[in-house]
Image (cartoon, rainbow, N blue to C red; front, side):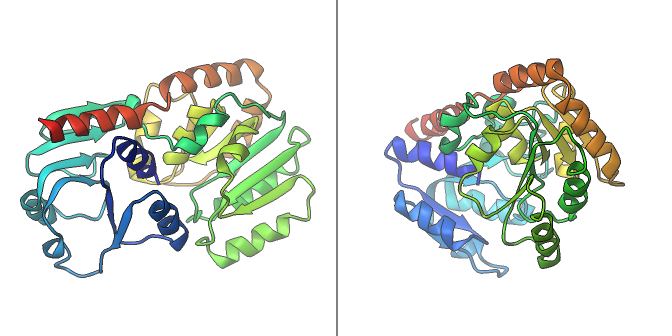
Length: 310
């Protein structure tokens, strides 16, 4: 999803864009094709790299490309660009590396490296909601990844609904969520304070309305930071751990490590304390909006086009 912002910026610069992917929803295919992007879904086979045509510039944002694949991709593309979340260790020399972490520095070699939060991509549909025009006290937005792989949302929302501090809970998930989790979430709709949104196309508005948010420590965290929504970030995978060690933790958001054991009571208590602290919320709002300014796509696009034109 984060690449949509970069795709839009490249199209604005009259670049022809092809998207190569392993899995994609039909809704997203239609959205991209409406902007002129050609979408190619790769077959799940060993030699998929060999079937790619030669290309001017290849931008890789994928955890499932092997080191051997990169050796072949280096031969396919005149310029090779990588979004590095510190997943890869031994890769061929790259033209451009984008590592949006403000804590984990890339160890890979390239002609140019773009490092830090200035390169956190934010989709264009979030831009109009940056000022939080409809902010509602006591409203908690919850999004623990589209599929909520650990089914945390049910327990968290159940406990939050018992608090008088909470006026409204909006939970966003995707239809890929486990059917048992979806069934349990549907049951929470008996509360007038609870709203369930599945595959919503109104996420920017739903986020912007919130007093605080509980989110996974992935892309949604940085979208919420852009909007200035004070957030609790749950780290449930190693590739999210930078959120714990970043100097932004406890300055622009609060991170909780849930990789070993999930403590629902701690998550809920932390959220309610934040909900009740006007000063802390104000600090988080000011700091997070400074860190993620929504200009990453243009910065990255300019760097890529510089390589193409020189």
